[in-house]
Length: 425
Image 1: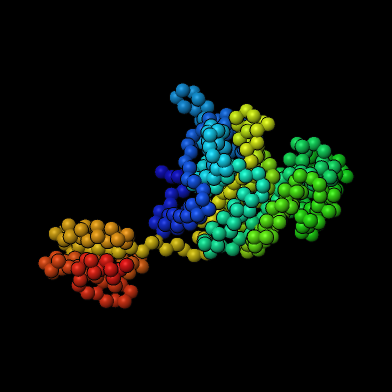
Image 2: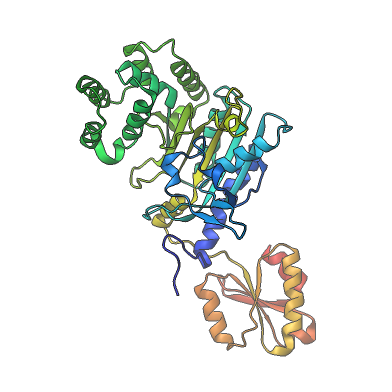
């Protein structure tokens, strides 16, 4: 008996930490006024396999199945396409529309550190805002979440349209060739300049064009302004979009956490403009902690109206990568609670009554009805870092009281349960 490769069970302290991370993310989704949404795990395969969705890059990783009616279905591989489907099916939605969703997604891809086959995504998306304000707000949201999690991150960003225009200036003529080159450039941090050069040599590009691209990636951290000026892109739409976002980043203080990366494109082909990815600032952990971008064309294509644009942009937090990094730093601690120990079975009803009063005061409480010896139960409580233990024996029951034991201060005294509640709170 074993788990399917790329899937895990989460229990105890680790699960408690996972829930804490999710609660921080969800609280900020609400704070930024995103509405909660829940979509099905099962979807029509045709929807998920659409060239306007994940495209060829994701199709090979999609779990495909059929039901008893021989309908071709698939497990969702992200939360973006299901969101786009909801907007497409509900033309009466008030725009702008902001939603968040936290749920499991599935990908039949290679398993490695921080990359599983069943994992949780935490997404926020907004549809109906054309300008860079939506991207800037999502960047603010990401910065807030990671600050509250105590994680120092950098948000790298680019504009795919700007990169496409830049490659056109370098002589990459066709759109398909530009997309292919962009996917290679996106891997520069993983395979290095030599790896990029080797991969470019297999694409059938003109030697002069390849040299131009190599010259580009050899530049020392070029800024958006430098590239725009050097390649005369000032009047291009991609450069204008990127420049507008850069201005907002500078004006809102996001520049401390955001860094322009001209080679970032984020694999998935549905992104139409801004893309961003979040990394550990120390560089000690290489996998992405989150990312997203603008996808203005998906929804219109899904309703069969390629002329209809629904401007949309999203952000996704990588739950598994965040957990990997947090677990590296320190072992999670199980949440503390009050332990109630009835000395004998006769005191169990009183223990349950006391627990009800503690829980009504929102104090996490456990009743130990295992029948273990008192010394063993107290030793277990101490090892788990439980501060308060409530003992109920014959004497306490006769007096209508409980005995509150403070495991930290090593004190104990008899008192009414109401007083114990106030003391613990």
